[in-house]
Image (cartoon, rainbow, N blue to C red; front, side):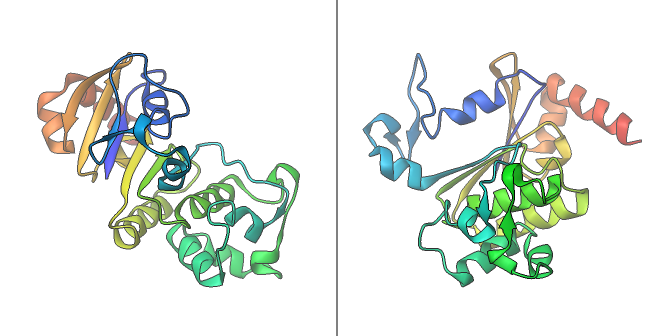
Length: 213
């Protein structure tokens, strides 16, 4: 699990968008498993990388139809597993039609947290090799966010997960954290290492700690 932190406009989302080739770098190259991504089949790359955005975009239809955008042949067991990871299963089971429940235009019949849970469910249902969560737990309360992270660790142990976050609390347990500042990588390490070595990281942490207090 890799955390990516930095101020607004630091380049966090831009860097992550290079991985599924939403656009290509102007210099250098990106490799997955040692292979330059330009040499990878585009279809295979898109199957291997799942991107979950902060603003959950759901389509009119049913919950099942939305989840199948992540895995076309998904069955009930796949949906149960994915919604369990995303902490969405509990509220879905309370709906009269469960997975066949309607998603209205602009998903107006779901709260922000429910939309993010459904979006994460769609992102993990295909068990991608690389999962990118771009501030996609921002509408969840701290307890739910913690449960999602624990489920990702447990259920997607073979997936490389990149978590882009404004809050350091979202990445504090990541194996490695990347610190960006004005488009540059200014720190790499664990939470405790960065508190010792990165002034930028320490400043973000102290500011957020003060707000929590």
